[in-house]
Length: 366
Image (tube, rainbow, N blue to C red; front, side):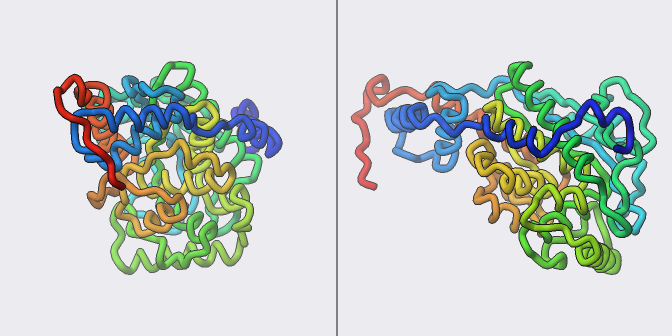
């Protein structure tokens, strides 16, 4: 392990299996009652479409036909990626730490969106390079300089990948204990569109040319170089696509690993979570490969701009609420979608029934 701090997050594969085994499915009775209430409201049947389906899903997760979304949190996992040394990004890795500090100061996009949605922002350091303990950033550093350069060697050991996942699971339990009704997993890490493309290419057996995008803004020459770096690493390291933890360790990132654990933890503790951009979708793809029960707890916020996102969405079998060519990360797309869920819930709780509204109930002929 790279640092003594990692040992407090020790987790074995057997430990992970025990956590996964405690994951429960949806409460079908609550979902049935919720759907019945939708059909009792004074409006055309099923007229809010997919929004109604999402509220029914929330009822199943919360085991109540009266779901709530009052308290929300974004947990932002921050880490650096050694592959940045290969020139696959427009900026250098110190930007990761700068943005993490700006989150504490309330100066980033996710902070602005969080204020508008009354959402708490909670940054977590799982591997920011040259980043001492910072007030307002939860210190869970697994590797003090971030991951290794996967163009040369595996990004991390299996032990380190599992430790980062343990951080995510711990933060999900914390969110449950704090009484949050819905979670967003955010991320910040220069180079993480490279790691996500590498993971998706291997896990889903897709060509890196199809899953790799421009990230924060590469020209065509550097995009081709980025693809070559990923393709070469996959050929040299040979991550096993049937073993998502091996894929994560060899070509993933600490932020992706922590997000994966966070989603697994949210499912374990029965908290719905909103997916964000391609890095978030990558973590969800790993998580679903480890625990198929994750599908019951995830809500896709959008169809992100990065090309790998379409493959991840297809694998996850979810559709995004929004389609706005978003590529910001941090959890911002998820917070853009959150008000839609809350407005749907407001309609569910506040619209009159047919009886109260003095309207004869509609009949369903579907």
